[in-house]
Image 1 (cartoon, rainbow, N blue to C red):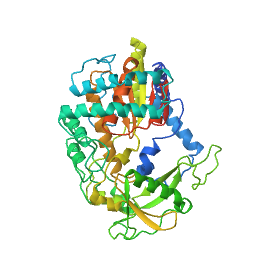
Image 2: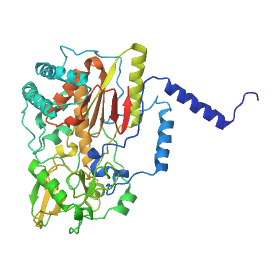
Image 3: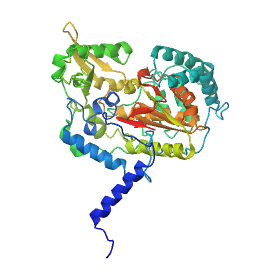
Image 4: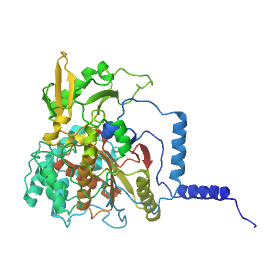
Length: 491
C-alpha cells in the first residue's frame, strides 16, 4: 500500500513530532543541567532507594548518567496532558485555574484572617522588602535583618489572629515551638480535609510515632502498602536487646557525633538519659560527608571540623522501624510531586506568558529543620536513643524529643504538617493567581510577577507567625533560573 510506513518508522516520527511540539512551547521547562536529586538535608537517612539509609557516598557511573539523561530527554518531550497533578499536599490536590484571580495585591479580602496577614505585611513594609530582594537579583543578602523584620511583624499578626479565632498564641504544650492552638484553629476554620490533625497537634504528649501508638490516618495521603517480603528479609523481627556498636565512620568522627547530639540537647530537640537505662533502645549511627569529596574531588576526613557532615541513624537495623509494620500502626505514606508536575505548571504558565503577555515569576523557600520541628510522643522517645562517647571518653546517652531522620513515620508526619500549612495558605490566598508546590521541605510559589513580592512576604510571615523556621539562605524571589528538585528550571 503506497505511503505505508513500518511500525518503527511511525514510532520514530511520533517521537520527532513530540520533540518539535515541546520545543515550540516557548520558554516552558528548561532542564538546564542535572545537578542532583531531592534535598538530601530534608530526606535525611531516607534518601536511598525505597527509604534505605545512605551509609556511603559514591558517584554514579557514566553509563548510569547517560541512561538518566536519555530518559529525561524522552520524558521531557512526551505529552503532559491528562496526567494527575500532585503538589505535595495530598491526593486531593487539583491543578489551579490560572485564569482566575487577581493580578495585583488585593486591599480587602473576604477572609478576616487574610486581612490580618495582608495588613501586617504592609504595615511592616515586608512587601517592599521582598520587592527590594527581587530588584537586587533575588537572593537574601542580610538574613538577620529579614529574620528580625519577620519576627517583629509576626508578634502582632499572631496576636490578632488568635484574638479573632479565640485561641491562645502560646507554643504547643507538647514542647514544640509551633503555635498549636492557632494552627488547629486555622485548619478548622479553613475546613481542611485532614480532620484528625488538629487534635494531634494539640496533644500534650506529642505526635504518635507508630512504634507503640497508632498514627490516626488523615484521609489525604495514599494507603501505606509495605513490602512485607523485603521488610522481613532485611529488618530484624524484634528490637535490639542491647547496643553493640556504631558504623565504622563513628570511630573516626566520634567527636562530630557528640557535637551534633550536644547541639540538639541545647536546642531542646533531645535530652540526656542514662546510658544504662533498661527501657532504652539505642540506634546504630554513621557519620557521612554531605558532599563525599572536596572541591578537588578528593576524599575528605570526617573528623575535619571544616567538613560538613550528616549523622545517619539506622532505625531499620535495630528493629524500631519494623514495629509500625508488624503492629499495623502506620496507615499512609507520603505523596511527593515529580518532574511531570513541575512541568505541567511551567507549560501552563509559559503558555499564558506567550499568548497573553503575562509575566510570571517564582519564589522559593526552604523550611529549616523539617522533621525536627515535630514532637515525638514522650512514651515512644525511649526507642529513639543514641549512645556515644563524650570528649572525655565517658559513655553517655541521649534520646530524641523531636522526630529524627531515618524513622519510618517521620516523612509522613512532616508531609502532613507541611502539607496542611500549604493548604491553609492556598485557602488564605485564593483571590490570587498562583500555584504552590511542596517537595518535602522545599516550597515553590509561582505567581504573576506583579503580586510576587506581596505573596512571598505573606507566605514567609504566615509560616513565621506559626513559628515554623525558614532557611534564609535558601529563599529566592524572582530569579530567572531556579533549582527545583535537583534541576535548573527557567520560565
